Image (cartoon, rainbow, N blue to C red; front, side):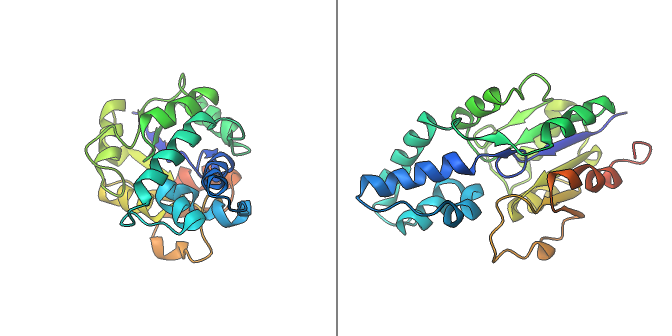
Length: 224
């Protein structure tokens, strides 16, 4: 029997931060503010609107101005989400290698479907992906285990035959709650304050090139 390798999307498979940061800076421009440097916004890209609006505008979800800003941010992002977003170097080759080994791969992201699909299609990932689970596919998002459990079930795998790769603590928490070993993608959108060692992932990849050596030891016996 084969195995299923599941990936987070933003910051793990795809470098989407440039378009996310541009949408965040668009909110500043709408208010007559100077854009922030990309380096200030990149570390919170995996946190979506919540993190980006906190850094760009100092807004938090309990602020009355947050929800209108969030809706405008999403509208701006949806309109220009594939301008600069690309797969990280080596990812396309990795996915082809996984399939070449007779294994399957899929995507589990907290990004909602209408924002995810245009980018996934733009990057030509739909055809070869065994499963795509978005933030609104199930009743809960990561760190809840349900999205990962749903992905395994939809692709026809037991959770113990899956590995999950992600660049956020929530990814590791979701994997462990679902009964999957996890690889931390340290090259992703990780802030300086994040101590990846405390995430307790089974393996850590400092670059996309380190993903397969990190994933392989976690595969079921007989597939390593």
